[in-house]
Length: 252
Length: 322
Image (cartoon, rainbow over the protein chains, first blue to last red):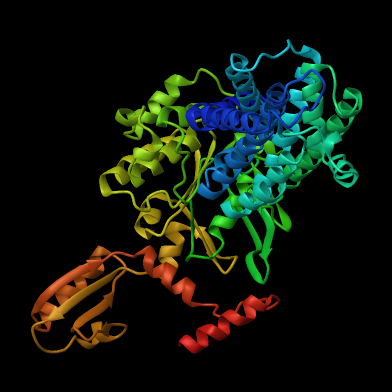
């Protein structure tokens, strides 16, 4: 890390904080709407785990889904806006290293994700009684999940040249993978094919493990989930750093 | 001897069929006020971008104060301040935030006095806390100048800094840049206002189609390609034979008589008086860089190397246009 890194991180955090109504309040509201609608519509039909009500089951998944989507939105939109408006030159002309760029964009994405996740959980805590979560698993999966999507957001932001390309990345990859990651159901309730398909989705492990932090039970062992989520995070981080070092689509 | 402030050796860059840089070599010594001129698309901005690491050349080396812009990029970028040509800004921040962030990227903290001075000198102080979005185009450009100077780089590159800036602010900017130059900063400037380059820069490089086509002191270029001329309109009659040799007349009736000095102007006028010819209009035109530029750009229509398809296509296009 160079001495320029803290400033870049501060800038990235300021960027979303200055419009926090849109970057934090809005996703919290969306998560609450999902919770109200799904728990009302499905509470009588679904029991994910014995002794765990559907609304309770839903909260950690919704919180994690919001975290994943906002981590991605933060790093990807910051990069593509800088590229399209051209002000990315001010960062590229500075003596920042690829590691500085990676760490600053990633940590800002994680910061926004954690803020959104915490707000979702605190906002529903008075609607839905939740057990005290295990802090180790909560932090481990919170950071790994946000990290995966933060890194993916950097990759998408570097790759996309237009907003619609980024939107395609978001709508055809990030959204399906988060929605199909077992936010709204336990994958044990799925037919075998879809169960197997879900196991190929790295986002599933982040959500499943995050839920384990609250209920002490999950579809997959939390250690296995953590290993897969961390492995995904490491692979994406390596790819992101490689792209930043090569100057791909940034330094022509 | 100290390394040149800017040293470019055999830099080449190709985009598809376009040779943006075609073996460019150039050295700007420390403390120089240097102009890089050329028509749009000549490769000036590509060269500047390569210095700043925004463009990676296919071949060649570029150094800033002896530091390689690729291998020693952190040192090279600390020594270099570039004002990009396009007006760009981050709409999330105020003018002061923009400058503090830029300083921070260079690892600088607590340089508020210098930021205040920059705001003052570039007439931005009243707008220090205004959002970048609310600024006029000229003001945004001045913020970019301040951003490039925020880390006090010894080498300053200005890529068309006065495009779209009004006359008064242009004067303010040049006054400030002259002072920076006098304080030892090396200035590399591109501009389409050739008068500016002529007044400010001691040395000039001209680029065309990715290559340096002229590189000399401003004075020598003026001497070689432009001349002082006496222009006269006559009430009647013809120029005396001694003056007519070497002169030319245009459609409006202006006679153009080359003169080397003020004394020659006097003797030319004396000859006219002796011949009894009355002069209705008179002016002395000093050598102009614009004339130098036009002449240099007009020569060498055929590129020496005709390797890339683009290079082949271009002269053909010109013939059609002619």
